[in-house]
Length: 111
Length: 112
Image (cartoon, rainbow over all chains, first blue to last red; front, side, top):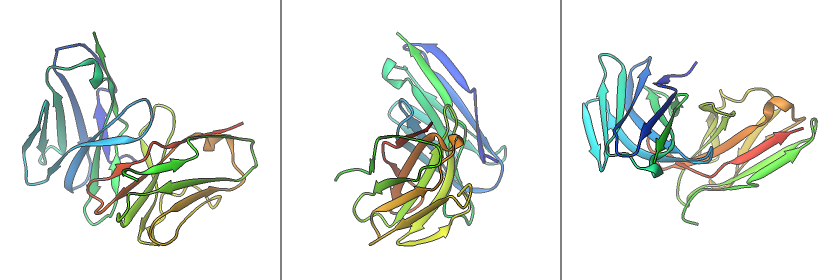
């Protein structure tokens, strides 16, 4: 079963608005990452947050992590048409040398 | 090259044929991963290499699937006697550690 579960599955907003995506996971982790995928091809790493961190920023991206609730959120501020993509969270199960990806959120930014 | 490359980018095959998918990781990356992504779905882990060894093959869906890595670099994923349910995008990633992975563009496989 998937370690990470994103919601919503799909999100459509107007350009300039903020987009928030959530990820929940099941087991203890060392870190959580967010990736973006355009057009069903390769994924691009966006940001990594460690289990001892609560919030991290990178440009227009803001990631939060709540280990007590086993959840994370990705906020994209001032969205642009180019942000249209699928976004995946990925977690490492402690002791496992691999990442487990969620099902993703399909984000559409309408001009 | 600067990034992970995969070949072919698209492959159409007939049911029952064997296919080989190739991944060239970023130079110096010791870890290499294969994933499968069905239409509109998340990534399904297949296999992980550290150097030429595969400590984790747990994701390979059946004994028709195999992978090897030579020289700590190029990896080949082989699917024997392909079935229609094997149709998917096969993604390869490499990393220095498993924490941040760099993905190739994928191979889109269609089994008719």
